Length: 611
Image 1: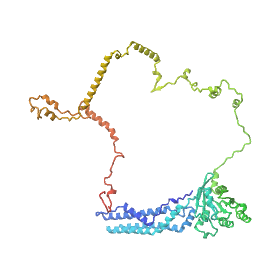
Image 2: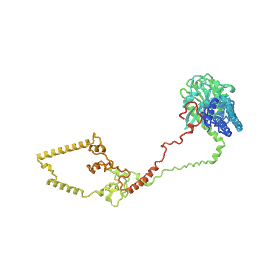
Image 3: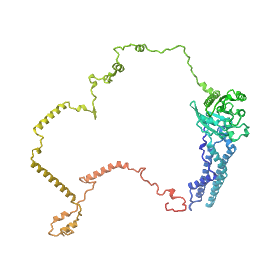
Image 4: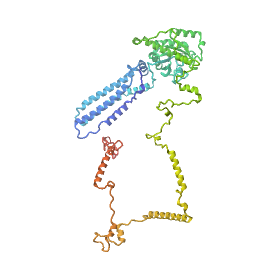
């Protein structure tokens, strides 16, 4: 099934915009500096690269434009004729041809100037050849400005065209202006076509969609057609003629029998006769609209004879009266048209050559109808059990359903009675409680109740003997008072002791060894021999500095051997941690301290300290 998506065509920029885009891209994406030490071969390749780059970008741009626009010869005849009516096929093909010619001319210019650049003998000559090449390419593009503007207008109009599938199931309406075609489309589809009480409200094709027999149908509303020669019809009318000529659809001819459209019934019949060749070999339905204003019974004898004479020639024409205002007969017209088109499509397929190849492969087997009446077969045992007064034999086990029916409200579902155990008496035993793989019942003492009673008796005997009586009960009042005061004294002492510990080092600057010696009248000496004779040697022992504490890595170890072993174990345990400590995506990493895109190329006017 052909599908045309004209809305996806890319915007066609004018020639000036294309030139600006391409030249800017060439400046940005090719080298821009020639140093003094460059050889002439490198200078030639420098400018040849710019010419080739510009040509390839222009070629890519023009090729994209040519590829996206539809070709008249490759699309459906309906769209080909529609584009010829709307845009003039010759003008359209000429514009695309000029774009194609411009593409080839730009390629030839690039080829010629690259050949000349190979023989450039100086920097100045190579640069001038490059300027000439780019200038000629831009001139060629400027000459195509009118074609580009025309193609942009065509693209905008193509995007506004309705998406009509020429091969799907379609209903096509035609008739004079203001006879009710758009109202019919609004009634049977979800479309919202403008309806006004004047002629040529609809100036282009409109499409709505409806469902019938679980199939999707498209309903096409065409502009009004006037009864005049084909060469005198305008663009609006030719759209309807094109749809009638090329679309495989069921044609619905809408007539206004009330003549409120401004055209007599005779003129409408003459229009039908004039364009009848356009819908030859297509199912045709005639809808007599506006019966709410004028009934078919109110037609004069001449008008009735005219309708019969016009449509009697076509045996397959179905005439149905309807009213889009009251919606009377609208569904009948839709259903009749859809059924007629389905039947017509089946006839066309049956008349084709493909159907013979398919039928040769198919064989439909039809069984012969039997005259014998076959009654249902019910076994005798089932009939006997269904008979009234049937009693179940004693040897047959009763089902739970039978027990429930017998006992009624006294029935209790017992699931344990069918347990298959070695000892049938164990069926109703409690299920043991298991905790961590052990049966709790195994740890319960069977004589625990008797032992508990013995303990209680023993405790009662001890209480009677006064074993649990406290010594405080035998004290006198004076002894109790002494004990209470002793408790208060102990409590007060503990408070004083605690307070002294808190205030011991508060607001007190620690004294150095020098200050302590000065207070005690001892001068510092270089050696023990220089100390006064009357001062005993034991005095210096108080002022030795504290020995440094061992490090945390050796604290708790006896000797050097244990320290070495501990360090080895420490390194081994750290290996696995180091494996997970490799640099990851979250770690900061600077791949290049001077990124090329920030520190190369030409500098413009302004500050440069940030570069």
